[in-house]
Length: 267
Image (cartoon, rainbow, N blue to C red; front, side, top):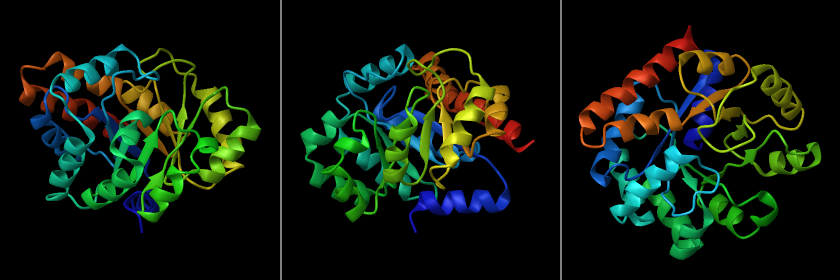
């Protein structure tokens, strides 16, 4: 069983909500990423989303854009990211890892080579922001062949017909974008999110996780009441940005914020 499926099955049995932190691989420098990943697990992460830095992250706000820039200054490439996951797996063979990013770096590496090497390194799923299911005819079978889950996004503006298509192709969990905008955007409307998730539950049985706008324990707890998982990205990445020259302090900040969210979700 894929680690993602196992983790969500365990959480369902425990009646707990998944906490899914996102950080950008290689930010602020490549040697810190694996340590940050372990720190997130210590603080209560159930799944880790690891961003693949890209020069044009169109769905991301300024916080994650700058994280990509910091990583790319160190020439972080997909091969380096896969090596990070492999190193992480030396101590942690249970926490699911999802790579999140854009299609261009995968195509540059070669889709077949990426699928093979991602699977071998210990990756469990891939979320390609600019690869909708309608255009995934080539990549989705490769992922399936190498036991990688294809994870897709659904937005508040997605029609019910298109949501049905996305749900039919989605694996692992569905990432519901809570806001009309980029990562790091403003206020959450939990009532609206609840309505949208109820509609999606009529189309799929896979877990529904909500990202964009989760910034503290209160927002995590509010969304956690209606979702199977909450994804937090910009709030964590901003902690790294504030402590670029002090990686140990950044690690403590990550653990502090994520622990707050974990406690709020479990309360």
